[in-house]
Image (cartoon, rainbow, N blue to C red; front, side):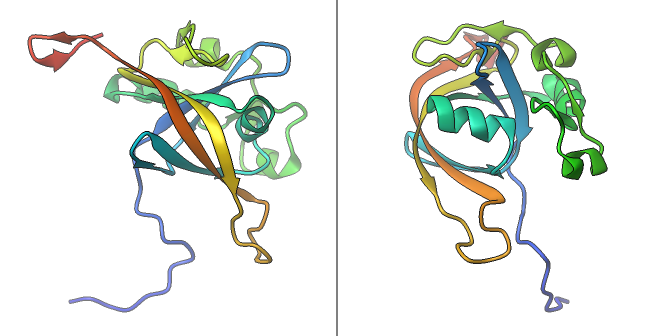
Length: 171
């Protein structure tokens, strides 16, 4: 049997991605996110409009979308309530976030140089997609979420995948 309902948000989940970007000082930022969909060699990312990741993408127009395997679950969990913004906003403090400058080290991940963008790749991730910001689309113009959520359209510039060994992806 089905019932009619009105949830506060329609979100049915997508795989987690680790977005890496370049900070103003040249250091790297990395953040998990799970609101992404693909159209050809473009992807659309939905994320908080005031995050360090979004700020870095707007400034540099570059990022890497790293697709983790189950082996990176621990690293994703360690990053879940961290931010690269200092000082941490009261909103994020209230939700349990804390500032971490070197999120790669904190998560136990390795930064690997990219070929077409400044942001590093996550060496442990089996798929790494270098990308450039093509457009930022408005979201909820005039509504309660206007400015809170950024919808970023990114064009993939380079794809890296683990080599195949015996028919399976291997690190």
